[in-house]
Image (cartoon, rainbow, N blue to C red; front, top):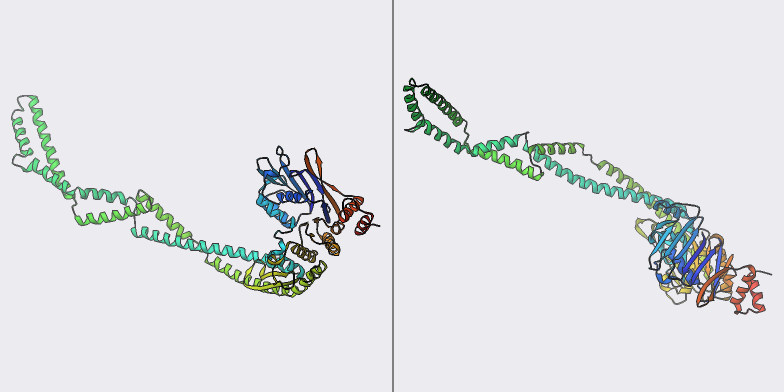
Length: 552
């Protein structure tokens, strides 16, 4: 419920504060006094975009604040979901600076315009002529039908089950996608594992093959070197061995002449021993040389296989490759399929879907049975509002698939006058007709629906006399169950108020200000009398005002 409204520095309003009744509140005043401006300010806290042109004084910021109490459940859910503190009162504030920038707050915590739009939809229903009203929306029409049919508990049960159904369906779809992706990954891992398994790599094998290939690649050079060594030292006609043997013999013949010669002779003997060792070892080397081209090809093929997998797995050595092989093996071992879980969810989903279809069909039947009763109630009120020639019907068909509201597609259709084809409300109703139809609809279900604060902006335009009196009575009745705020020029409607405010303009110097005051009982008589006869009400106008107010 809207407890109070405060406006500072907005359009021609420098400062304004209203304390509302929980029932029917009426705002009256001459044209241009600022009633629509007040609604514009309320629209700001409902999430409307701001403009610095609305500032009364460009040197100051504009502040619009509304306070609510007795909050609906949906508002509490919103506050909890968005992380706002929930207190006994809900305060929504909007501030606009001279540069056009604005800030919004919910319980003194910064909020976005999207948040204001969402939360305010549960708090205020702003009904203005020539605007798209919620009675044109399928959701409102269906909610109204459920309220009249007494099916809200069935709807709540169905809706809870449907949301659970959608959650399970979403979980199932995600599992299927995950299982599909996991299956692809599993196939890839199996392929990688098989490649490495078929390679049958051993630790250190890469280095051994590389070394063996290096020897094979140098085998011809080694053969030639061995042959050259043996030929040069031992095999030629003037071999190094023969030449050194002749020199050794000659030095041996002279070794008795001088100890030095003896040393030289002994050194030649050592050289001979070394040459013998070289000959022996070169023959060993010759025996070890492997020049088999087939083995070389086999080793090259094997090494290429290793190199290929090293490149594929982006590692540098066979030890890293073996590590990857073991890791993949571990992942394959640990892999768990969700097939069983998917199968169980599919079974649950099928059972839930069957139950929901049964509930939705039952709900649809109960809704259809209530159509004629609802249309009759609305038509009775329209007759009171001088729309006796109007016609209403409910266009209804059912879907083959479940939705959040069941299987029903419902549209209330309307014709205001004979000869006018009955069509969608938004296509055939004028502003005044739409206003009266909206009042009739909401009055019909006021006792059953949890409506937010209802604000009506001059919906009684073009209505007078007995029709206006009945419209005031309907608003009074509506105000017994819901908070209602009405801006009106009709004295009959104003007389129905539980609390009446008067808005007027006041000129100070060169500036015009909007003022507002709550009227006393005596002031209400005078104001309604003025609305009946003009600025200087006659005695009969005063008497009529008292009669409207039921004052002796």
